[in-house]
Length: 280
Ligand SMILES: C[S@@+](CC[C@H](N)C(=O)[O-])C[C@H]1O[C@@H](n2cnc3c(N)ncnc32)[C@H](O)[C@@H]1O
Image: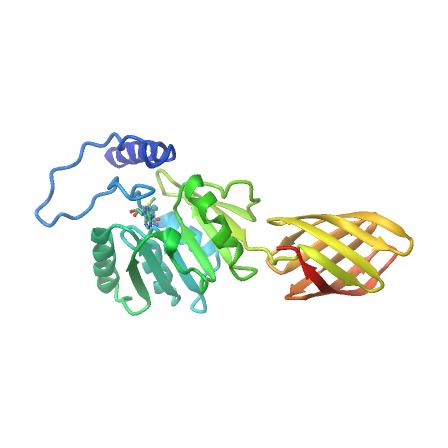
């Protein structure tokens, strides 16, 4: 299985790249340069080498993120453009950001060959400087160190934006789904996340005051009520929020400076809260 052998070498090379930019080059013998100088898998990249996502996992990742024609998909480090092109084939607008000019040229040729050059576009540049604010989906194949560095940008995305990454979890974040692809070889597992609404800070909940601290999806805080203070725990997934204060539970949806939904326990029925102060 020559293909599996190559993938095994690439896996080792990709992991080796985790050690940082100063790590020695991947143990790949550079192939003889073909006349056209096309990059080959294993081509060194600025912060991570080029290893293409297997086609079946590309489709699985787009399924996990439920990509439709209404989406704006970005791949940071887009290689030969396969993820961007597959998203465009689903009708989505899709943009690849790639540092290596030869890969950008290859991706553009591939998009033209696939007949999706209008929807699938490619920008030569550094992913850490890219404007990702329009993304509704990030479909990636990056190392934990890359993801860690991108986290501050991830947090600025609209609540509910899907981030799906091949091979590695986003450090210290809880994935919403783990997906695997069959007929794949290596690099066959992807992790899906929903960017949570930002709810950290002080809220007015009826006559009570709620203060929330937020660590990605995880929430802790205090409910300052006339009857006494209580600890609060919960989570926020995209715009969906769940809070527990003792035996009382609050489920609902966050819309900017307001959240509302159904409560159960001693306070059953509709609840709503207005933001008084954001803490980040
Ligand atoms: C593991 S490959 C993934 C390729 C593609 N996303 C896929 O899934 O098939 C990572 C890609 O990131 C590119 N890359 C590395 N550092 C980069 C940077 N700072 N900015 C943009 N692209 C970068 C590499 O050239 C390579 O094509």
